[in-house]
Image: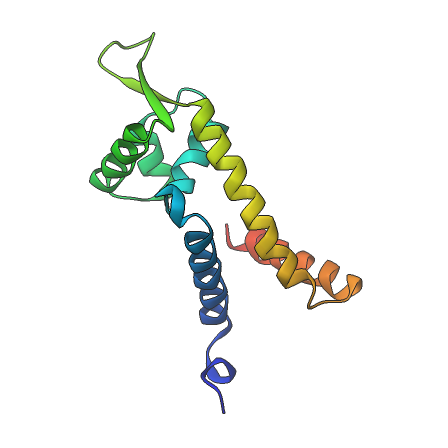
Length: 141
């Protein structure tokens, strides 16, 4: 009996997520960027005038972890910090063109990984899988 046969569903989902992380990290290793960086990049892209504190709350990360991640992305010129117009003591984050290109590259690699999964299913099975995942997400939020 294999370990995956006795693991609860959530652990198998976590294993799949870890496989995705490993794949993305390997695909993007030459760019010195890691899977976790994309959580920040995507949030900054999707939310205008986001602050580090807001990222910390949205991701439920400790503020010091967010600070380290933001500094790393800023050093790579993927994002920039801009003084807030409303409160000059605050900085808001903005994605740069270089950061946007990296985000697009990540999305293309995510699609590659996903296409490998989709090959394992018939169309109807894939529709069911997507429906089941949406149901889980909707009802556990």
